[in-house]
Image 1 (cartoon, rainbow, N blue to C red):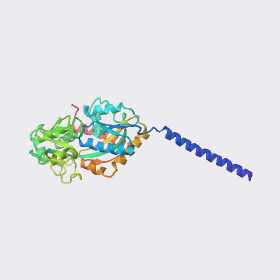
Image 2: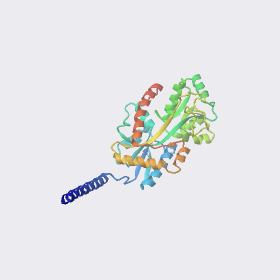
Image 3: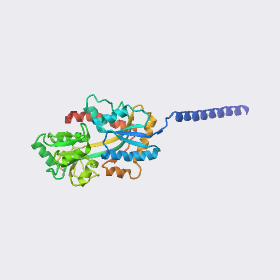
Image 4: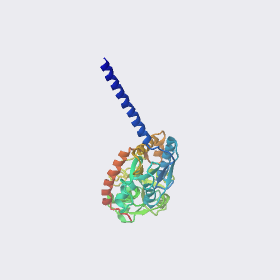
Length: 334
């Protein structure tokens, strides 16, 4: 009987020791986890203020500010084909308080297009979460001669190189879109690059440039004002955002013409994985708040989040896909 009690006591003591060990181990892990956020968070953006993507990012920042109890600032640093903003965050403190807004043009297209790019999308940054996706539309002057993609393509065949399209820079989605349309239609069209968003559209209204491959959010104000018109969705089927706009094929264009883009948040590569997960979860929660889906839709976007691993897989896969696409359509950094 005494032997049994002695064995029971030893087992109880061992159980207590194990429990204490687990408690202290857990406390140690939580003590080592860095506090976040402990100060204002900055989202550096390569996009000019006022564009639809800028408005959407500020909507997200407002929600994150409320959830985290710290100010979340959107710092627009356009220029240099994204290099100003990207360079600033690449060298920033890796503590989660310095984040970067990116689009697929910066993370998966430019690395295949621009030689000597001073950043590596996979090795210099930690993927955090997607923020939005956006389909594109072919847009022309409401008073111009083009009422369909068929009209535009016919003009390009009659005047090789004479049909022009607006772009915010080499490797941007509008640039890729215009070059892809030319490639798939067997024509030659000329890109006209602009440093700011507004002139891209006023140049079309004024008749200086033929068309643009644009998101709904960017083109909608001038379309509603009667200055621009949709020729087609840059997609193989009609899109829910504008179901009355014909697909590329329906408008006399290539059946496989398909252009879309995404935006997301990344952090400096050395940012602790636990902080990256916290930020990703915060973005997912903010995007799922009531009204956010509708607000993004009004801007021409679909709000969409992703885990860090999902975003990493997306970047890795698109880097390979665009390596082939850039080569086939023949665009180069000028």
